[in-house]
Image (tube, rainbow, N blue to C red; front, side, top):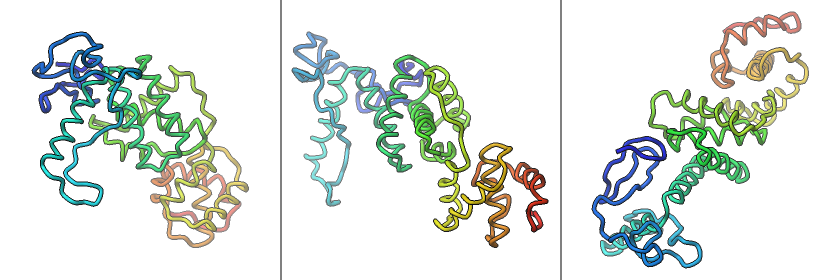
Length: 287
């Protein structure tokens, strides 16, 4: 069977049909409750009655856990009850509600791993939700969609997030995850008409400084150098060039290979840029 949301395979899990891609529950393996009036049973025809006002019950995600908050083991009766509540939680939500709920959880988990501000997280979820409703990235798993939406929301807020860092913690199961995220990012940006301000070396500097372990004083030295050099290349190359100039002048043990990896460019681009600026500086450029 194929999932109607992301086109991934559907497998039976604990008596229910669950999508391997987006974790959508498409229905039970064996109908435990007959299909009756949704007002009497759940809104999809299964389980106990739904909430009278909201149309849903148990909106908080209940995880299967074997230990309490203090780390002590839970009795078997308590574990079984939590498992039962989790099953009811899934059954009383509609298909669209379940998908939005899991999408929100995927975006929240990703933002938590990267320490993203709450306003960027809310914007990322909004972008991902609109993209799914408008069928912009049909067949894309939620991990790819949430990564692309977060990257777009961060760029829109002029917050630099390296796509490599997002891909590293997104848990994407498909092959070539970087290409998957880049493609989804381009499609989201074009379809939703979101305009992104040009990336500047200053916006990329905090992320690069974290990768290189630079102190606040060292970051200020790089900022001053960025004000001095003439901007000709891309933001990545300009930032790597300023870092290399300060490193050679101060004596930091930073090679072109390290800087190119931190800034997401190539050592050839850095070497060519330094060659253009070489008459202004009194040090020999090496690897």
